[in-house]
Image (cartoon, rainbow, N blue to C red):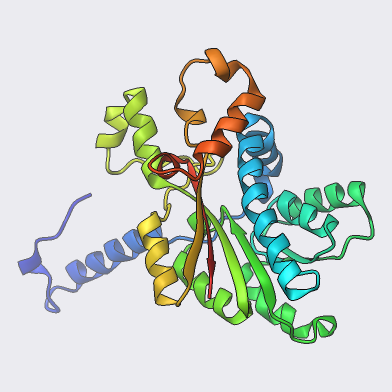
Length: 297
């Protein structure tokens, strides 16, 4: 792209000024980000994320972390929990929480993703206490306020899994959590770990990719986010909003780094067992392709 020297940009040269404005607008359009909607690749998402061992590991770690915590909270409160899942996707964890007797509000921007989740829920039990909302999370608050059945109740637990890395302004979702979470409540954040991208490509010898600062995944089909948030960023957001981290785990701390199947890697149950063991141990958990953080007020 041809650039215009700084000393020639002035109001006395309207053609150059117009060219400068046009260039700036083009750059702004290229850099513009929007919240990701997986409507068009819902089938691909389901197969790619949950169609194999990677999905089993992901769900196993989240089940252990969330179900143990929610059971203790429910016992302490003496009642089922009111739970919100923001950007739920296929909502496997939330549907299972509903089968445990909790009241769920499940949200996603993708109608196709939630339709798949509804089918899964109906196959288990058509009487589960689940309310579904298809909309961006930014529109969800208004819908919740209009829901008279909730009586304005806040949520005991808010889940946000694989959402932060697909938001145009991920830090802003913390304000939403603040308003919707009960004083005693907890949030469950699961997000892509950008350090794992670097580490995996180091192992694979993809040095050219790591040297390419302009590299972007093709997000028409790719499920690798181009704007992941680092753990340090999430920690800073939590601190700024007065949350205290109570649990951290890594998801897929070694599975994705094994280029060849050998020994225990030929036995899926053994892989899941070891992933669970090392998911909460340092330094291994920080190598997870995803990180899971639970935090309270």
